[in-house]
Image (cartoon, helix red, strand yellow):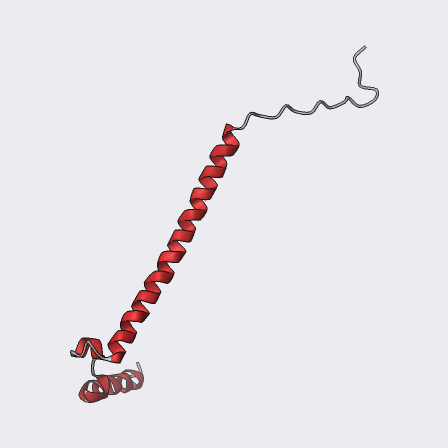
Length: 93
């Protein structure tokens, strides 16, 4: 079993944990909730919520359309079947 890939990954993980300034939290988590980056995060979250809401509403509207159309087609009286002429030579004698 080769331990080199495991040791390399462990060393990188240890370096990331030791260098804290490069892994600091964002402005929202770090305490400055009135900064421009925090406002950008809030607008980004709101935008994603709007997109997800629009997609879910569109799917719901599609199914409501299908249900209403199915109900209107089921309520229609059945059209009489057109009479078919019998082929030549198949008359009863």
